[in-house]
Length: 497
Ligand code: BES
Ligand code: MN
Ligand code: ZN
View (cartoon, helix red, strand yellow):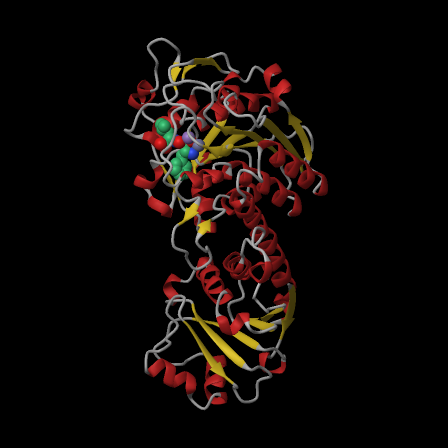
């Protein structure tokens, strides 16, 4: 795919399709649309009068052969009402048009912004386009492996030449961010027989090398040396050996303390001896999305040349039942020294995060943010619509909320109260790994809190936003890659807490 940039008159540019983003209207007031109406002998007016197309959010329509334009068709995409206009309106409109047959059968297209000349709008448009049109074809064969989308080139057009450079920069940023999110989707969609902890480590190493990110892989021996007993208790049931992946991006002087990101990397979660029911168990190939978000965040930070030091910690293992597996009731000793009574071997994510959160102390972090498909209970709290967050620093939590506003990746804060902490105490060990059903999302965070160091911390539970059940404007059915845009936004605006 090629992206080009231009300013000036759209009817002088040649293409197969011309895309207009339009606000909802009752009649035509915009000069550009008046011209189009004339060129189409009143077709646009007819569409509006008949209510066939009025610019409602994500509404779409085509006008063929407008006179005096060098295009076969004009595709109109609705942005909704002016008072609700946001960057995400463009992200959605671009997502919808990205899968529109008229556009997919074109080889060259023009996206006209007209007077919408905000950087956020440009960036959101490319994000929406790339996210909406992406397909994961790696495991298809023959004809199905081919991407049927004929579109080869998009020229982004603004009215004013002065805005051209801004446009190009914003589009480039959007492209890098969208590619980051697509990396998350692809990694997470890859089945566990093609993405073992070892393969994940190899992929991380390769990506790190090509983006000048430091990468160290701890193998099983090194993990034993680190005394990560909680992590190892999950890994011991699997034949595939675990890996602990350490990534270091240096975008600031070495004396600047890093932000540490921790991602849950369960490449397959069967539940272990507390085996999950087989219905929907296949979704658990995606239990490493947290790790994918962290890996892709570092890659994206490097590509955007962010001026921060960022560490990524990815504990990676399968969670399998076998005669060497940890059994319910077993007690294990974490890296920090706290003992954990493993009530339920399916509450494995928190065990591997516990040791990673303790390992994070090595880096004297300014802040630690962990991201994980941690609890199914999130679905009963916010549904597929948003990710619960919990933490120990209101300012850092607010930053996540701000980044959420900017990126349209929703988060919502939940409390951790002493009653929840009580729920995680064990009678014979220091803590239990499962507090049962009530407040399952919160008690998971209350468990993690026992293992953090003296640093600012936020936990993001992406278990329910990880998957889109039906498909939305720019998120096709399947793995969403949500979390990446949120993290990159947070890191881009980072200031000392
Ligand atoms: N990986 C799962 C959580 C999950 C469930 C993610 C569904 C995505 C979709 C996690 O390891 C898990 O099994 N959690 C248990 C915890 C319980 C045993 C305390 C859960 O949520 O049921
Ligand atoms: Mn589990
Ligand atoms: Zn899990």
